[in-house]
Image (tube, rainbow, N blue to C red; front, side):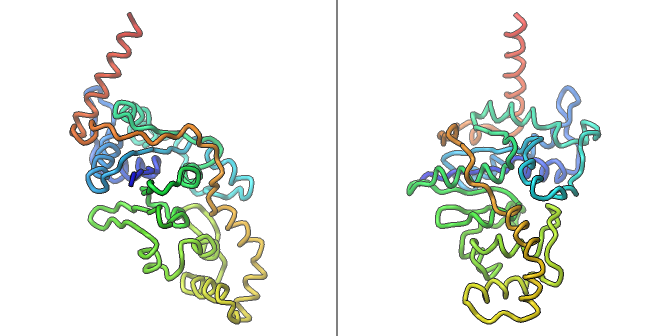
Length: 285
């Protein structure tokens, strides 16, 4: 069985950049704590999960464009980093991370118009085979909808990290992964600025899903609430449902280069920097 890790790139970058309290700078005084955390995490995932291949997917400046057509408030609560100082800006780490990924021969993709979540969903739908299993690495709960017999969600939280398969998800939410879209459409998502339905919390949402699936009698007040908010629920479902129809023909699962396991994090960073210096030297000759 080939195990493929699908890394939600920006999710990992932000957690590392803000999760490391102290500044870490290279010989040129550049902040690199996000790079150190990112590459160190990849090494940790390799040790824990023993993958055949790793693919990293990043968002781009246009990644949420499609969903903005449905709701202009979508992710409007996100911080604007355009005027943030470089040493305090996680996006300043991206060029260095990409250089390190190139050095490690780990493929990465930057998604235009659609989000990294959609690209990951499309990889899973298009590349699913009997000899392949996917582990998505992210704290984004939208990925719960993709859990299946060959797809898992790994939420890294140090000693409290959880690998969700179907049963682990059921144990936590008392619904199936396929029900999660409706569940989240009902309760909303503050992270993505998606407004839920007033009066419907987690317990009520779970009861509604159970009632609808088992064709039981729905409480009159709840039925009225659903009818009144039908448009909002439909919109939320559209925003939460991942687009699994993106063209990903250029994605290949290449065997992991042993560099990532055989070299320490700082050694990888140093070797990456030396490789970049050599490239610049050759170009200047």
